[in-house]
Image (tube, rainbow, N blue to C red; front, side, top):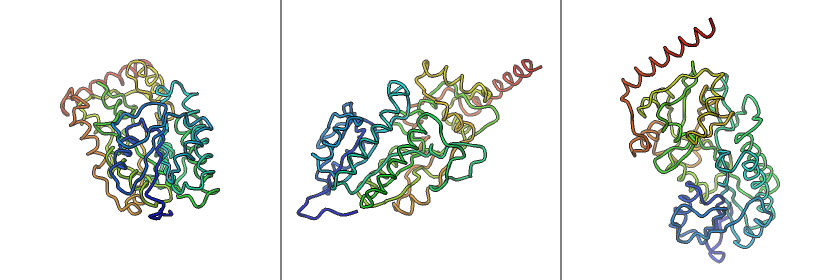
Length: 353
């Protein structure tokens, strides 16, 4: 990445989706860096953090006028965080796709025409690998999913990555960094996984105990900061080391788990949504069956970074901060799980007899 000269001044950075938790915390970190002359944030909603010198621009990325924002702010770096993961928060699946895919296309088109842009950081997810019983033990960045996603958030983010790589080919002078985050959890953020673990009873898929990989918010922000201020072109898995089995996580939260047959899992997620606000979409259900773990060797090497929280420690911080009030101790949770499991197996046996 070309470093601005003294005559040109310091770094000028634009963050999309500035109302989000990660984007807001990144802006706070950049505000404290003397090497940064300008921080701008684009969103349709006000930032949730108390930003001091970040200029908020209320704009819709789907509008071609976003090109004027990039041109007028003369930014050299764009951090694209405006990715919606839950249809409910976007106002429906159709609008979610527009915000994710059309918004990204407009932003990338504007960046391509802006000669000052030299660095693009894209927030992505390890969900692009999918989840399948024949998956490798560790997904590396060059692994492909068993099946191409056909709908939902995973399909959106797969298209977004493809468009970003297209920009990289057309503008080889731009450093393109794609960060594939694992499920993010901490006491300061609300995601699908934090809502899931806060349920009084955690539904799990009968016959499966998936390996979960989690990422603490602090570590996610640190990698975003290093990607923004440094030169790290490429694709990187970003996660806390180690894993947590879903059964182990349920016991840590003091929640009993309820075993649900795989054929009923989709119906259960549909029923939970209006009651709990948890939007577990169809393409996410396989993760609760087979799990997903990504190799973070490349992140450790290229960013010279070791996450402060392992997957288990990230979950424990979420619990210790009071986001989850344990209902049972580990022994009680195990007893309840056994009784519920026995009752469900008995009911299934009578049903199929």
